[in-house]
Image 1: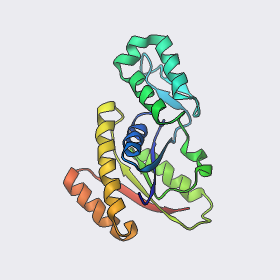
Image 2 (image 1 turned 90 degrees about the vertical axis):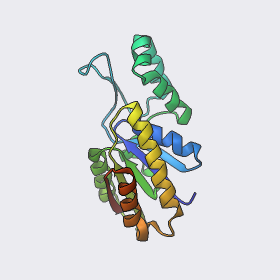
Image 3 (image 1 turned 135 degrees about the vertical axis):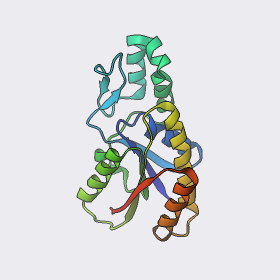
Length: 193
């Protein structure tokens, strides 16, 4: 594979990790991140989310939620999701703290608010390398079914980008073809490292 990819959602749990897991299995060089202040997982009610710091191992969250209410978190898919996540990497990472990970060629986000945060963060960094980075937003609802669909669509887009002679020259066509084929709008922007 020619490029380095980053998958970004709010908490680095569902959408970014589903895509990270699939792309990793397909041989892509991929990392994933969240942009939120904390990692939030559904709790017993909407007003009672489970909140963790970025860097808290997925296994620790799994053990914590299994202890709190094993049946609830198994039924709503959180425990299986955390188990998958811990097989991909140790812990959720925050996008705004990823400078040490080096530069990426393509960054995917899965909601417009996250896209805006990624673009703003890249804009505020020192542009020493003057290396272009393509930032794409594919809107994906934050549930397990939609995350799986979003991951497959992301894989499709990554494969199109990989075979392009130069993504800078062909991104407009790649996006237009994708939108026509899948009837989904994409936002994209080019930033620099």
